[in-house]
Image 1 (cartoon, rainbow, N blue to C red):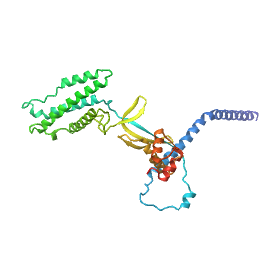
Image 2 (image 1 turned 90 degrees about the horizontal axis):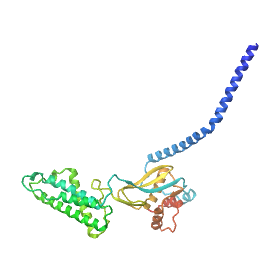
Image 3 (image 1 turned 120 degrees about the horizontal axis):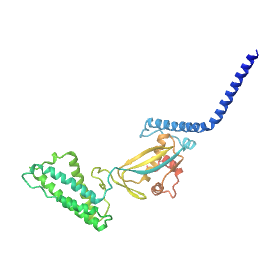
Image 4 (image 1 turned 90 degrees about the vertical axis):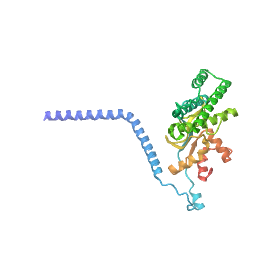
Length: 325
């Protein structure tokens, strides 16, 4: 009997010891699990936001036709509620191209036209002499210009004049070959070379216009022969005042970024603010409580909307009222 009682007391002691150890483990582990619980709560909130965005994307677009009008009493009794925070900004996605300069672009166009001359003249190799292009001389002139560490305005203008003359001579040779019935017809050129011919002609026209007017601006300026759709975007950043690529208008909501506009041409980002707020309402069903933007957005809204002072908190009310349409 005594042996049984001692065994039972020993078992009871082991159970108490195990319970106390589990108690200490839970107490010590509680502090470390708080961060996990907090992260799980944040994950749940973000999951809810993702579901809201997904449901908003699946909604059918509202009809553009006339809809049933709501009485004034209903509008006064149920004002629109604002919720959330909208961050809007514009940026440029830099393209993978060489930094363009006028002299380097003209030199590249000269090399492209020389390849076209060689192909057009290929049936006349033993019949007529090859048009003179002075490749070694033109290449030597370009290399001599690139060796200048900091070329002045006069040297740049002198180099541009020379490259324009070389390119004009090549175009005259191409026109003479196209008039010759024995030369290779234009339809036999590859698609890439025909595209290069059109782009180099437009590039020559733009560079000649800027050279004659002594200016650095022209509409739809070409900065890359391989990607002629790229335009210079003036962003005003420190060290990079001009970038080359697509311009984006982005709105950020709870850490999620939405691309509201993409354009290869430069534009005023402030014109997109009202439309971004309306898009926010279409996505989530309510207007933002506040909008956080740069000064360019404030300036544009003050000028276009005739407001003396722009307040981001009333931007949702402006969009609800149809201002800016």
